[in-house]
Amino acid sequence: MALLRTCFFYAFNFVTVMPWSFVVIASRVFSVHTRYRLCTLWTRSAIWSARVICGIRWKVEGWDNLPDAPAIVLPKHQSTWETFWLPSVLPRDLTFVYKRELNLLPFFGWGIASTQMISIDRSKGQDAFEQVVEQGTDRLGRGWWIVIFPEGTRTQPGSTKRYKTGGPRLAVRTGALAVPIAVNSGECWPKRALMRPGLITVSIGKPIDPKGKTAEEVGALVESWIETEMRRLAPHRYSGPYTAGERSGRAPVPQD
Image (cartoon, rainbow, N blue to C red; front, side, top):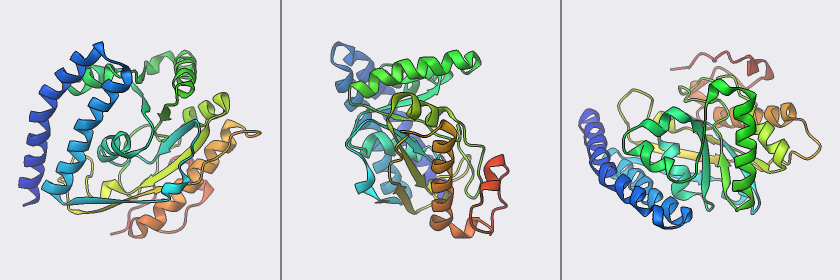
């Protein structure tokens, strides 16, 4: 049954993303806000189909922690699910920072490339970050929020990768609040595995004001809150409480 549900889900979304990507691309005559909203119609459809076809439900804790101010959103990344959920549900237009190669993905990549996301060439190093600062400042000034996955890539449930400094550095450079988010989506939609029914919890932490802090201090606060919260959301995945020593990037051993 899990195999059938997963195959049906991917088939449904593959069939719908193709025509909808052309709708988004054709909407270049309209404002970027309109193109963004058209994109989110499809991401909402993906979240809906995950619930209806695969039984993946969700709830939010800490919604009131979302600020009415410029923000850098820093979510845990366990699954494709949150890349669809964030633009579908959060109250501001979002700019994702991601590797430029994703723009080459047929249909999906073409669509997101038209909505003024921030795609970077990771080989450029500091130059790439300065591009993020320049474009990020512009987006924040227009009321958008910026999304950066602090670990840079998806992690398996129960694991922790080295937290990167890009998000905290951007918060310090722009003065925008850093908003940590913990999510246990990998329990239902794991990487390279069948989708499973269940309840995903999105936990939103209190914004971290970067004023008077270094990027390292902001990063440590973000990491500590997310990893501590992950142990509350999925205690069966961890051998004990979060400790600062895990910042080396070593993954804890998942517990069955």
